[in-house]
Length: 303
Image (tube, rainbow, N blue to C red; front, side, top):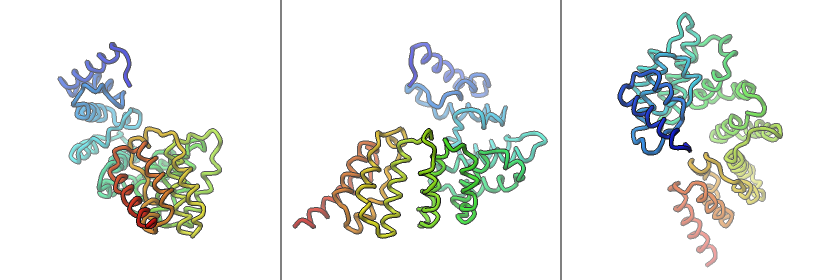
């Protein structure tokens, strides 16, 4: 949250200058330094997108060093336009890496990410092994591609993906891995990499949403293996969190609850979980119908 009248007025000025001249490199750069703008700037997304296009065209490497990337704001035509300008002279590897990362980042926020992922893979597959080994972000982008279009290859990248992060910063990548293998019902691979979670160092950066995710996935594993007695405790652990920006603004993890409802199992515990989720995900439209289903099943069972 921005604080102070002078600071607020400064960002309003930067926004006005970009609005007046979207090719002004200085003000575009200043605007791109922030991931958000004062609420009274109603066209903030338009301005941020324009600022990003101006800066990245002038300095392609700024795509790696600036915040935010704003790739989720670009239209398809703007992505193509930017792709053509992301060129590192006399360095084909770097050019393909930047282009692949751009399309991989853009895919993360698309309803249908596959076309963007395939475009990303087209560039990333042309990067040499030497360059790939020197860029930790490369393996992230490549794994994101394979996660969606080549699961078998994705599994071969998991070790490299984790090794590309320091142990203290592997939490996010590890949860993403566990979510992916669980989605493929590959419980053998899940069990193997789940052990890594317990081996993370005590000073690891672990967001509250990571715990919520891991314990609900553990519940799905327990359901798969028939170890249902552990599920109520796992549900409790999954909601024994204080909340975080991702929990508060994202979508609730409800796959386990949906399966429990289908099997009419642990309905009281499921209701507690859903009600707790309402404190985190107040705008998730799936919560109320699930609550209604649980209450109907509970009343029918008690009759």
